[in-house]
Structure formats: C-alpha cells, structure tokens
Length: 297
Image 1 (tube, rainbow, N blue to C red):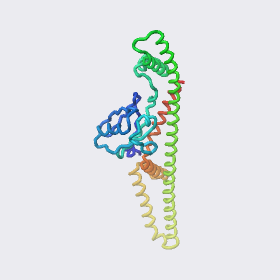
Image 2 (cartoon, one colour):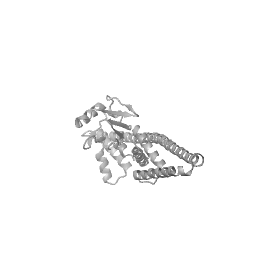
Image 3 (spheres, rainbow, N blue to C red):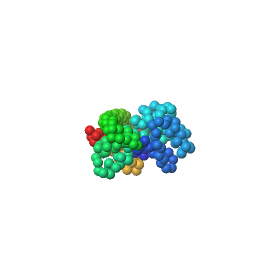
Image 4 (cartoon, helix red, strand yellow):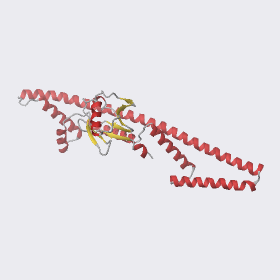
C-alpha cells in the first residue's frame, strides 16, 4: 500500500564507526560519507555534490525546520534529522554506539576473548586512556599516577555513558510517541472519511428505495417500474464486479470501508511525508538501547 510513498522516503541509521558514516544512495550506487563532528553541514554537502553532480538542492531539517549550513555536524549527530535531496527525504537515525567512546582495537580483542560487552567497554576504555597518559619511557611512579588518573576517568566515563544512553532512550521514546500520535491523527481522519462515504452510500440506497416505492405504488405501477428496478439491480451488480476486479475482494460494506480508509490514509501520509517504516526503526533502537543499559548497570 505504501510502495509509492517509500520510493521517496528512506530511513538510514548511521554506522557504529567512530566517527560514524552515512551510507547514502542518491544515484546508481550507495556512497559512504564520514561525518566528522568538527565539519560543517556545508562541507558535507560539498562532498555529496562532488559525487552526485546533479544534486544541487540539499538541506537538513530537524522537526521540519531547516538547519543552517554553517552548523557543525557535531551539533546534529545526537538527533534524528532529515536530509532532503530534491523530492527525496532521508530520515537519518543516530548510531546507538556513537557516544560510547573507546578504542575499537582493544574492544575487538576483548570480544574475541569472550569478555561480556559491558566489561569489554570498561577494559578497552581503561587501556585506551592509560595508553594516552603514559609517555614512551616511564618509571613506576609515573605508571602509578597514570593508573590512578585513568581509574578516576574510567569511572566517570561509565557514568557518562549511562547518562548518554538514557538521554538517547528518552529521545527515541519521545520521537516514537510523537510519530504514533501523528499516525493516530491520520487514522482518525481516514476513518471519518470512510464513514462519511458509506453514509452517502446509505443515503443513495434509501433514496433509491423510496423512488422505487413511490413509482410502483403511487405514480406509475409495477409494469413501468419493473425494468427500472432491473436496471438498478444490474448497475449494482456491475459496480460490485468492477470492485472485485480492481481490489480482488468481494464487494461488502466492510471491504469497501477498508479500501476507502487505506486510500485516504496513504494520501494523508504522502502529503505530510510521513514514513510508517520509521516506527519499526525507532522501536528496534529503543530495544537495543534498553538492552545496552542493562548491560552496563
């Protein structure tokens, strides 16, 4: 039902690399763009235009509000945002691991040794900071000071990680609630429209029944009205068969109501650039972040 909509709207999740990468497909093949937090949106657009010469109309929206191109990427990578290229809209979701800083090499070694994910992050972060604190040549006193400093920093890092994850979780839940509320509004409008059309149909049937009754018993008699009723019945039969050929469903008020409802809902979502697929993506991210919070607590 939503195929025409999904051709123009896409949902993309940033990779878990540090810094993250945006895999964007504006032409014939996907291209990776590394999102350096110190670069501006304008610099990102320059990279995209270099690969896709025809893409001149680029902009980033947060809550349907354009973000200035002078904004650094670090200010928007926390948030869900929309990259608009012509008529295409790419909903960009932040990577759930973007803020979990640490050395990827140490983390990979820990995972290969079978160390649990929460302990692996602690160990990799600890070793990464220790490596930064120590000079090439050091004595035992320098080593002891570095260990004490890193231990303090590692504990604050784990607290920071938990706070960041909770913040991300709240953001995802808020976005999901907003999207579900918006979808419910569209569903109510679509249902009202379908009910209204069925009421019009009921009015037509009642008017038809009244006209046949008056024509038969008051004005003309059955001899005159008989072919008219036959034509009316045949017309409804033709309409029912046409409905079946087009929708592969028998013509019943319930199926007709469903068709009207779905069509109106699709039009409303397309008009507002609403992507129903985004709900599943956010639910998945909420589940992943909740799982990661349990691991570090």
